[in-house]
Length: 88
Image 1 (cartoon, one colour):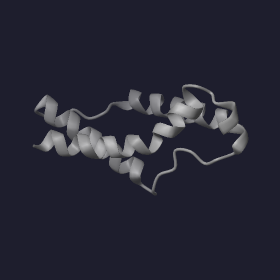
Image 2 (cartoon, rainbow, N blue to C red; image 1 turned 180 degrees about the vertical axis):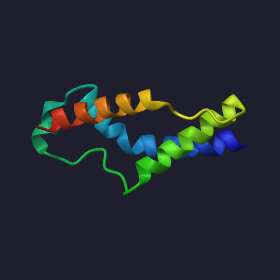
Image 3 (cartoon, rainbow, N blue to C red; image 1 turned 30 degrees about the vertical axis):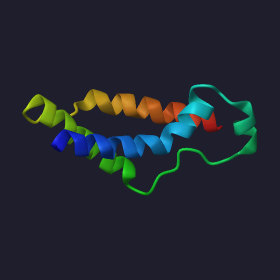
Image 4 (cartoon, one colour; image 1 turned 180 degrees about the horizontal axis):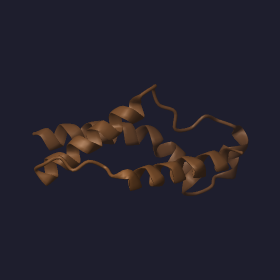
């Protein structure tokens, strides 16, 4: 099943960010912050692959190509900016 394989790929990437989400973003774990431990690291270009798989997943569900529009870039930039602000 195409969707099952794509979901597995999406979940694999998301799992690499789970500790970051749990410790820093969702719960603001001060002990983890003070440890200066690297969280949420992933291999180079894994994020590019994630979004390509996400696009394939959406296209499969929709039954036709349904590309992300320019607004998704704004969301992504806001997300990255929030992450960078948290690092400072």
